[in-house]
Length: 296
Length: 255
Image (cartoon, rainbow over all chains, first blue to last red):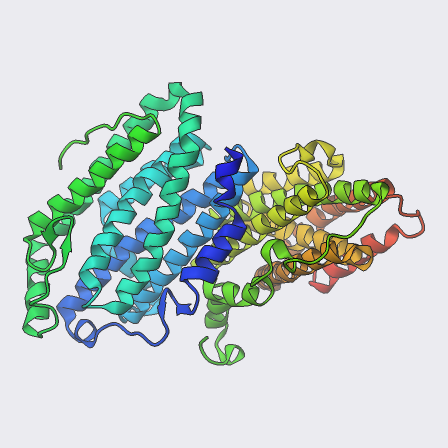
């Protein structure tokens, strides 16, 4: 265990992250980049961007609370040190996505009201389930919930959004690239560290699997609200963008689906399918049986 | 990164100095190209067996303090009153974890197994201090926990490291110099946050004074135990304690 944890040291993190892919960035993107004028000037696009970004802030706030809360419960100092780097990664994510809300025109004294208005209740419940485990000091369940389920969700969502924005919004796409690199490291730690602990505590498996099933349900419900529930808004946003000539012809394929032309329900299906398949693979690697969630 | 810092209003100033961006710009100058806090390729100092054992014992005690600081800082995040405070404490958690890592690395250079149980060698008063700090954290008592962590513990470390630097070998002194730069930032946060509370509330001032009296005993006892173990003459031992008391007083927390 000690040898693999050397790869997750503070020194490695300093060299690869702040002194590596974040070097010369400002809030995660190249200095001087701005949100596209079309988003800032069109009320529908701006509101849609704010709604999306709020979900990212909600998820990252949960990740910050969970990773910092797990440090005290960690069974060894190498894990504590890794979780300290993850805590700062998550704090940075909170900071850069909050900054995006400000860049989109949210006033500082309106931040909390804006988040409360847009936060999806299923995403809030998803976070609460995780934080209940963290508050109890349950390290194994907490790391599975945080570094496999939450981070696995974030990883795929960020990848999909990054693919969608790489040409339309380079500032946001660059911001997402750094977070994807962070999430990859977090998921790797979860897989590598937690497998041995699951083997040491087989009695915990049923409870952890129940948690995964419940969290996965609320994740799917969030997707359903986002894609099917707001299909008209998504279609309208796409129509405005294409009418402005800022994105119509380019195919943006992610996991076999053209993100530029697929219907909202197709987008929901590819995202849900990708995340759940990743859960199954990663849970299997640490000795847990994936539990199929109910469909919202 | 964004204009003249001191020309900003107070809230905006705090948001900036407590940010990840500010932290990174602060540490980059002294951590870039300094793996484990030291100049790469610098010579390992030749130490006698006695010197080596004394340094290993001292670093082991520091590790207990840094591990407590890591648990304390990360625990504070959960009930910090605002986003800027949470983000600052996240930077502090990484700082404390780095301190633990560089000290374990120095211990390994001295031939001490970095995975050995350094806690079992810690002095009882330091462990009692840690337990008191974690009691405040578990109770989600913001003012008491922040005071114990960012004023008392940081001042204790500041006094110990500053004094140690005067006599340490060059490699250890360079490592401690980087740690001290972090500690100054942490003390500034405690001073700033609690200073505003004190300005508003005489009751808080009274309460922190009582906590300080309790914790001072543990801090001074830790110094005494450590210095006796190191063979420091009795006449020189009060110096570190005096530096600690001066540091806390300079931060605005009188006895």
